[in-house]
Length: 230
Image (cartoon, rainbow, N blue to C red; front, side, top):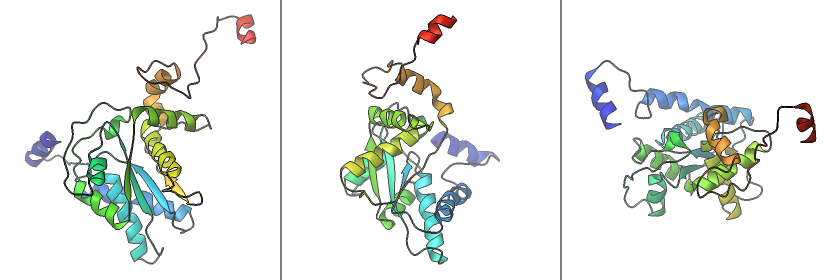
């Protein structure tokens, strides 16, 4: 990111990431569409996967704009879900917002949020504080298990969405999210972009992971009788 900022400062190249306000203006549309699809009834919680943290601020901005326009009377509580392998915001939150420290992001199946030093950190913290929001984390096993559970219902989600679902499960089990709370989990990508991780999970080929919800493929001989037997 440091290198990209240096290059774009010298060349006529548009920096299209969460540092740029125009991207955030586009991202906030998702918050408006959530409210519209709920007939302008505000959900209690909105859970967003967080890496570079642009979505966390953009969602808040969209919700707050609708409140200021009189379309809704409040802003939902935001939850930013981070991978335990890349969790600088979670650590900052757990410290009571005392001091932010960048971390060395370790490998995570939620690869798009494998970020240890998010650019719009101050904006994300502003959004969470002003929405009475919280930050939750999930391990690699927790996010992959959640992804497999969701897929078993007919969905086909990405690891990042699995991470957000893990946060929902943990917050529901701990009682932070009540049984009657209306909660939106934001799905940020399609599962086909991460098909290899799904194959590895269901084949139980991920080291040190139980893969509790695996649906292992069966090898079958290419003849009619063998297929019919299975």
